[in-house]
Amino acid sequence: MHGNNLEQRPIYLRTFTLRGLNDLDEIKKGIEKNMIIIIRITPLAHKDVEELKNAVETLHKSVTMMGGDIARLGEERIILTPSAVKIWQGA
Amino acid sequence: MHGNNLEQRPIYLRTFTLRGLNDLDEIKKGIEKNMIIIIRITPLAHKDVEELKNAVETLHKSVTMMGGDIARLGEERIILTPSAVKIWQGA
Image (cartoon, rainbow over all chains, first blue to last red; front, side, top):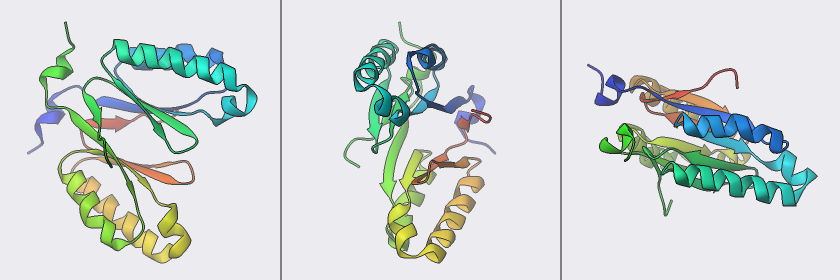
């Protein structure tokens, strides 16, 4: 009755808010668990743009190392995907 | 070298903007293709709240029928997931 995907372990989608570099560890754990992660970055953007830049660079490296993808989602968020999830380009 | 997920067909993540009921067909096709869908709903919300309510109800039915999940993402967006993707509660 169910699709093939149900026979697999599910992929989890989790949201985070980035307020400082302290939040990175928890997010990186999510990346390593192959989660889809949506991060609201505005709290850190309003506090320290340089720190935000470093944080996004760190996350970009972690995601790329896992074969995943990263993209902007509007003004307030970024989205990270594991290698099993591809971000549709041109939408 | 790669994780197990890469041997599967990838799941696509696609973004949409909901401006009217005309946009529903394309979104429903995405649901049927087991895509992860993020929809910016504010354009329709600003135009016709009743129509937005109907649209979200329609999408809710489509997603539920496919065994998927639906959630609010901030003030501007909703997110729809196929059955293979579970939205992490309590984050």
